[in-house]
Image (cartoon, rainbow, N blue to C red; front, side, top):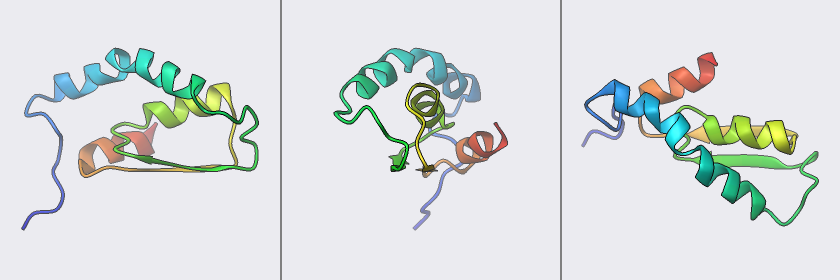
Length: 82
């Protein structure tokens, strides 16, 4: 059984457009976090794609450390390169 995939979509351009298309939902998710001070928090983003949520969260509420995981290895490589 194959446990990792390269990308979620067969068209990389569709994957890249997710960054902007999902920005509004990321902002809404951040608003739902009850603790405004994440300076000592460790954050796990499951299904991180290219790491957009972690970057947006850190920009608005800096946290101590973060990790993103995803089954799409190419997306994680892009997140690590950013």
